[in-house]
Amino acid sequence: MALLGNLRHRPVRRLVQLYLGLALYGVSMALMIRSHLGLDPWDVFHQGLSELTDLSFGTVTIGVGALVLLLWIPLRQRPGLGTVSNVVVIGLVVDATVALLPAGGPLSVRIAMLVTGIVANGAATALYLGARLGPGPRDGLMTGYVARRPGRSVRLVRTVIEVTVLALGWLLGGTVGVGTVAYALAIGPLAQFFIPLFAVPEGTAPDSAVPEGTAPDGAATPPGNPAPATPAG
Image (cartoon, rainbow, N blue to C red):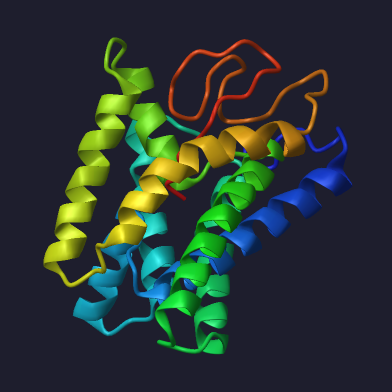
């Protein structure tokens, strides 16, 4: 069953790592939100929709993730347990964490929140991808689209989609700032650093939704040498 994948190989570690990574991802998003210094492109979009609809940030994140997951159907992509969990867990955790974190504060505190959020986001990405139970819905949409249209660049497709959601989010009132630029510059190196630390060795039947030898951004990589991933959730 594609949703569960092959959990016979180190199931406890992989499940713990998956949900720890997703929870940490939600916390990292909340830290960046409370910093008021800028968000990554998808979260600018989520925040803009939240402002427009008066729904919580987490609710919008879950709703957008579910809609993106529906777009996997014509692409014949099969979600993993990590994919479905990504949609639900991150949204719940980000709302809970935002409710606990104080708003505003001195600039030094906000910068610390931003930096901590970006670093935590890189670690969280490595944790849930390293569990090999499926990518996030947004990453799977991009890789699935390119798989159905050989010759298209994942980087180009990703750039077009993220610039589009960033622009829409900004027009809707999402926060674009120095944090947006810092995230774009830092997340690749951070993921490259953390992924080898948390990658669970494959068993006899790999069940990651990302083919062996392919990084989540579509760049070919040698087996056992993970490449950086720019998370899209």
